[in-house]
Image (tube, rainbow, N blue to C red; front, side, top):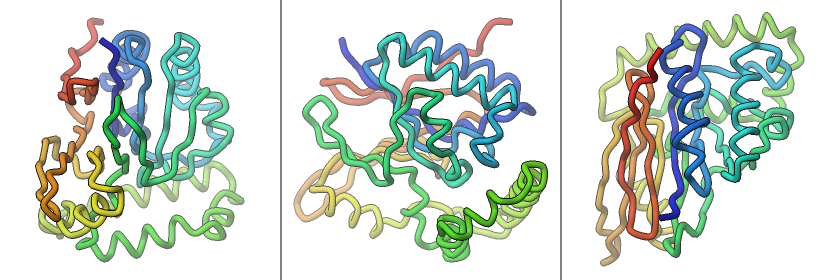
Amino acid sequence: MAFTAFISDLHLAAERPAIVDQFFDFVSGAARQADALYVLGDLFEYWAGDDDMEDRLNGGVADAFAALHASGTGVYFLHGNRDFLVGDAFVRRAQATLLSDPALIDLYGTPTLLMHGDTLCTDDVEYQKFRLYARNAQNQARFLAQPLGARRAQLRGLRAESEAAKQGKSAEIMDVNQQAVENALRTAGYARLIHGHTHRPARHVHEIDGRTCERWVLGDWYTDGSYLHCSEEGCRSVMLSAPER
C-alpha cells in the first residue's frame, strides 16, 4: 500500500556516527518504498551555510536525497531551528522541494498541516525572541558574509549556550502551548497536524470547536531513528533497527 514517511530532529553530526549510519541506511532502504519523504526540520545539528557542502557529511546527505529522488520517492524539506540556513544550493543538489512553515498538504485525502513545531512553543519567550532575530533576512546575510570557519565556531557556541539554557527551563515551557496548537489547527481548517521539535513522540487528540483533530509529534534520532508512516488507513510510528556493521 502506498505511504508517505515523515522524519525530523535527526541532528546529524559527525560526532554521532551511529545515527548518521542509520540515516543513510534509511534513505537507501525503507524510504525508497515511500511515495514521498518529508523532513520537518533539524535534519542537521547545525548548518553554517550552503557553502559548507564540501564537508563529507553535508554533501553526502544531499547526494543521498538526490539518489532517493531518482529512485522515485519525492523529497520535501522544511526548516528547523538548527538548519534554517539551508538554502537553494542544498535543495537543488538534494533534488528536494523546500516548503514553507507551516505547509498544508493533501495526504491521501486528509488535509494535513506540517510544521517544525518551534512556533508552537510560545511559552518559551526567550527562544521566540531569538527565533525572530535569527530568521531576519538582514541578520542572516550578515552572518553568511563571515568566513565559514567563523560561522562554524559561532554555531558551536550557540549550541552550547542553548543546552545550558535548557537546564534552567521547565519541561512545560519547552513544550507546545495548547492554545497555539488549537489556533494552528483552526486556521488550517481542523486538519491533521504533524510536527517535531519537542522530542516528545506521541499521538494527541484535540477537541476544537466541536471538531476532533489529530496531532502527531515526531521522535528525535538521538538514540534510535524512527519515522511516521502515513497511508489511506492513517498514521503509525515505525522504529528503525540499528544498522549492522
